[in-house]
Length: 103
Length: 231
Image 1 (cartoon, chains in turn yellow, orange):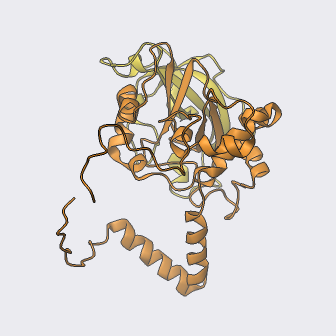
Image 2: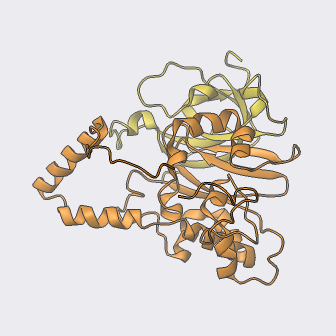
């Protein structure tokens, strides 16, 4: 496994890019444009956009992150409670510092 | 249930596109000598024999052995080897589909974890076996991220408002297992006794273990139902 310096640190607020979906992204529609907090680093890996097509040696290797969202941020009419959260993983190319995106 | 049941004609439902694809690729691979039909059968048999009891064992051991729990929470993939599960085998590249990292999610009095895969049906098969049918349905997958408390209530699990429900959508390389809290009434129990109450659904996060419930005992007939229809 390659060691890479992650752009984001645990605790950073990040926004998932609301980019065009080209083939295999593993970035769910419901997270696009949403802001959450980095809670963990994950080992660097080849982004699914390349791996899905077998582009391994020249594939784009990036750090991955666990991002925690408040459910009340993801769903405006969320019917649970304020404390509820959702975690999912994002490659670095799908993240930008919070506030830089549309939301 | 009807007592006069007639057999529907024995017709096979048409194969899906993926089933046709799998058959075609499998037959080609066998023809080319990449593996034999017996290799394929043995692998299928092996894969289908994996069960959640590995997860139960890891949970029970964690309740009794803080050092094991610490290792499991900090490195799930490596610590799985202590209970005989090597995530890098048998393909040498991870589980049959891809390389994965295994993480155990510890429930606390303030956080309840539950797992889902909205993209497909990712599941920690080496330690939980095959996923239940409902776990793979679009219904569970789309509703667990959107209305988690309602879905948990449909499983009979009601959590208080001050407990954070934390949904884990396993969309990338990681696979997750929930480690429930040890329930009351289990003081002095050994690892086997504790493992018996950690059922599959507790490890997914849609149920909590109870001292009086194991997966092997037949559930008691609920009161008021005893006069129900005979089968």
